[in-house]
Length: 507
Image 1: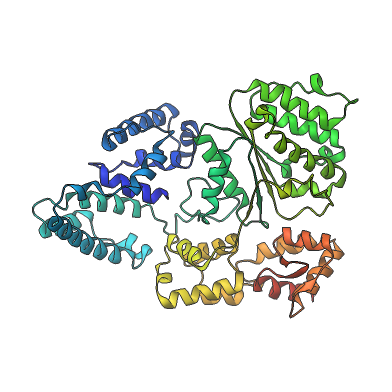
Image 2 (image 1 turned 120 degrees about the vertical axis):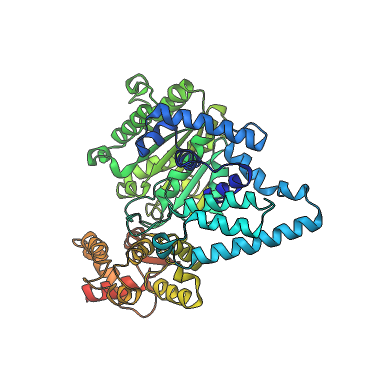
């Protein structure tokens, strides 16, 4: 269930719609944020936000006639969404049919008018008071009063829909409370269920800027919402000297976990060069950190592919993760630990199949956006023309150029939403230095400069009319950058944009 669906359900039960601050708290709590986090991101006082939240859950408890808290409100609303509409139970078949007919007619008429063009509607929309007058003329007996409340709330949320000033610049991971995050079912649901299992391991794989970290943040938010503590370690943030030896890396790793759990690091009490760094690290976690906590913890490792560049560390650390996962099946203390491993490509360091963490746990490979998902994101950018058959055809032209790559799609829709370029001009200029992707493409070009083997490999791919077999390490590195897709041992450009641009630049 999405936030918007949950709000529609609330509109059905509440006598009055949530005010702006209540809806703010509801939305961000839905994404798993704490009251201090909501206060920090919104600019309100933390105590005020906490008070609003407390009163909000009491309000929902009264409206839904059951206890609603910050911890259970999502499950309560999901359960209500599956139940039959409580209003139907009190109506006769004739009343029910007549009311549904009126509601359907009015709702369809209003939504159709409001949906023709979001940006135009925001500038010229009819005053809400006039809508209410029209509806009250249609129904004087008050039967439609609940619909009026729903329309008012719906209109208020539409006022929050993005116009050219409110569109979100596509940069980095998508914020938790973002209107522009697109789910890729059943991925979110599967990962949310898996992270609740003791001793679980989730592996998320996708190329650069495909949405790995955005998904990770939502898994962690869901975990916090369900009472788990979270630790997130990005290997991209580690200093180069951390990777000079296994001992330095593992001590950095353990200290990082300790700090995030607010536990005093005591590495020297457990580190013993006679038994080695791997055993010392394991004893530190098992005998100290996991003993100190009385709650489950999610350990999320982002940008794990960086360690692939350090074969000696990689060969020891990755099997260590696998051993902790397997220990959870025998030792109860390791069931406190749930692992999430995020990486951009397969490990190109040879690992024993029985020691690799990449063939256990729940594997998640993020796909590109489908046409329907691109269409939904376009609508959220105020581009209602994509609802027509001609609009869908235009979207297929965009996807033919950039694929369903989330970042490239968002860049395009952001520019189109701001009306800074037409789709025709965008497609024409896309692979050139005059196009909206020029900085993005130049960044990729700079990344392969100084690596002749990568340049040669990519050139062979973009100049070939068919797929090309590449040397393994070059193939994996180009895949992690998102420049090529691999099917078995064969590589091809990830999208036409890359073929056209790099064929010109490397030719």
